[in-house]
Image (tube, rainbow, N blue to C red):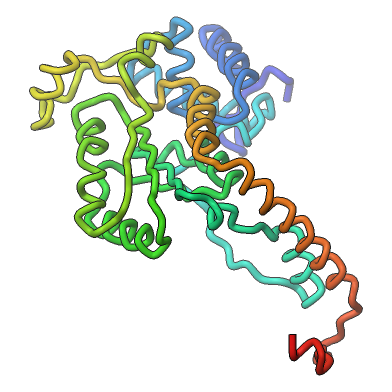
Length: 303
């Protein structure tokens, strides 16, 4: 099979049609610009480059992206899927492997020493693969509400905030439409109903961002009971969060988190963590055997 062949599934190949070549090239250009993105984010980046904003074109993007990955023109990791995930069981081959794993993955909870806690919330579950890695890097909880957050999610979140015993900041990312704005408008009051000390700040999407990045719009959903109120304040055009360039979205999430950090306290925990990792590394070097026990000396027990 030649390099120009396309495979739509692992068992068959076909030559690309001439009309699909510009789309394939555009997909590769966008993919080279961003580290990772959802299929819908890719679609919006193509729309921003002059391709049509239609359901039919979205399907073409999905098909072309599949073919490009199957023929290894496009790395699989470039396209993330926030809707589907593997859920394995974490286990080890032996105690030494467990200790090595503990050393490799050990991290302190830096936020215990911070004056406020931080969480990132988004209504778009599909963007989990883009937003969550940033949150994970900073040790911050990420919540995908999948539309309006349920009563259970709001209650359990408020209880977690109360248990933390400190003020919380929630940064919200959602669509610029009737429902997306209603979610962020009511979220803080809904969490406070359960006794949480929390402040909710909407970060995206905002009209200024839509104008700045020239994001493509779509008509608001007339079936949404909130549409009339939204249209009266913002006009009839709606914009999906997915339309924001992935790098911009990641930078916004990172900035929200970083601006809440007390740098001096953060560095103090970094120093402690480094020492603890040294301790773990020394424990890993002990030649453990099955059934072997380690007994403390009387002085160690007393301390």
